[in-house]
Length: 203
Image (cartoon, rainbow, N blue to C red; front, side, top):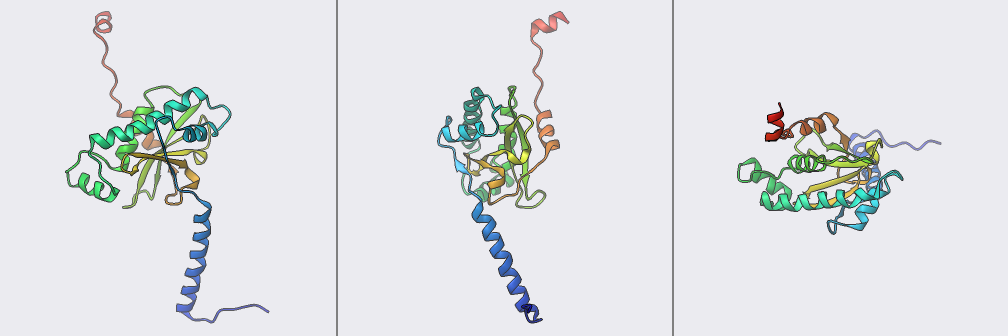
């Protein structure tokens, strides 16, 4: 014998909502909040990056951690960042701060990371809730040639300049997607170095 619910609109809506709420809670419970980086040489963060693939060169682990950790703190001072992020966004959007939005943190981190060559790592522009008021942008690090979905987010905006990190698929608050054209667009803004006087003389 089948079990049927009465054909009652409001009751059906409530029951449906409860089912979806239970599923959402189950999915959320399997995820994990990003962790705070404890220092510029955080061993847990370095270990997580090393775990991306056996090909990852250990020599680069501390460099990634140091860059991501220190740039957030530097930008917090430069932009006089306050917390929570909604307040900071208001200050930026009303012209009271020169920077401090999530995409600005991500841009500066991308430009800093791409100042050097990484033989066994690569970086990606990630976004969630794109084209909505809740849009958020971060940089994701993966092993060279690895799928974006297996990467680690590096997020300096969420806690006002304090770096948090975690595997992209585990973030309970955002659903991350790669935007390669945006990564390339940010990279194209890098100002080409001016030729030295000696180079100009040779020309």
